[in-house]
Length: 106
Image 1 (cartoon, helix red, strand yellow):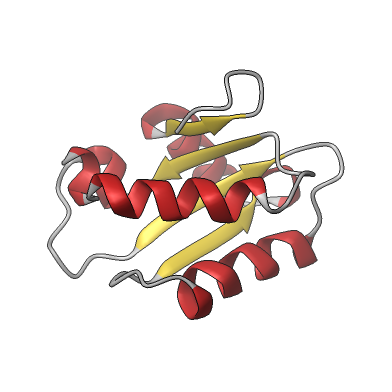
Image 2: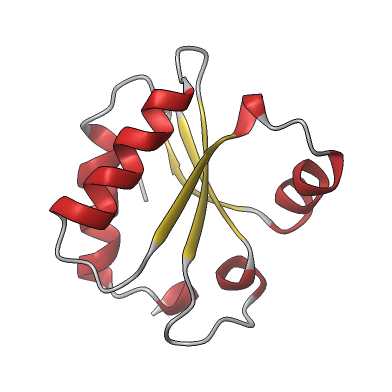
């Protein structure tokens, strides 16, 4: 159970991501990526892609939080739109690629 997420949860995440073709990569960051998460910790995701917008991040968050049977809260951000240097450095340092369109894997 990597990052405290069950295999079936990972499949729901993959399904949601694939429904938005503009997403080319999904990076897990925060406590789940660092390994110091608690069972109720949220799932922080940064999405990348040349056609990704703020609305894409909102749509993915809506799918994961409202439509999928997942017991976690998902916080989804658009990586290329981040202006906070410390957050970018954190994602680049501890982030774990969960999905890449090149490999089509989660």
